[in-house]
Every structure is written in C-alpha cells, then in structure tokens.
Image (cartoon, rainbow, N blue to C red):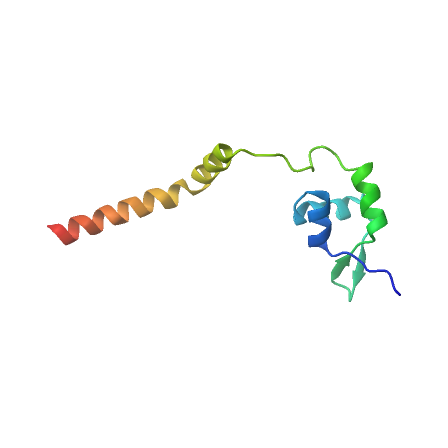
Length: 98
C-alpha cells in the first residue's frame, strides 16, 4: 500500500501553526515538501514529525490567547467598520423619526 502524504492543512493542524507558516517553512527550506501536479504541496509524516520535535522555532508555535485578547484584536482591526455601522444606524434613526 502506498504511503499517504499529508496536505498543507493537515500539517498546519498537526504542528499547531497556520497554513501560511507551513508555506513559509517550505520556502525557507526547513520543511521538505513534494509538489503533486506542479502545484499542490504534500508532506511525509515522518519529516513533519521530525520538524515538530527539533527545528520548529517557538515563534511558529501557537499561543494560547484569552477571550479578552481576541476581543481586543477584533475591535482593533474592525473599529472602522463598527463605527461606520453605528453612524449609519444613527443616521437612519434620525431620518426615520424626524
């Protein structure tokens, strides 16, 4: 039976990092990858496991983030949209009631 190769999403889940970080590791040459059909990256489990246990820097490992930190990030990156919606609702209320 042929060996099953992992895709980028499976490797990201196994290592606890983002798919983008997996592609960066491949680009840096730290994680061997195989192109299937010239476009799709595939990985051998043994090589991914070796990376997880030896080379993977702490900066790539996922960090536990509290709910408060997630909420702060959400508000920081979406503040323009939140304020725009509040202003739009306020204008609609003014138009409808006056």
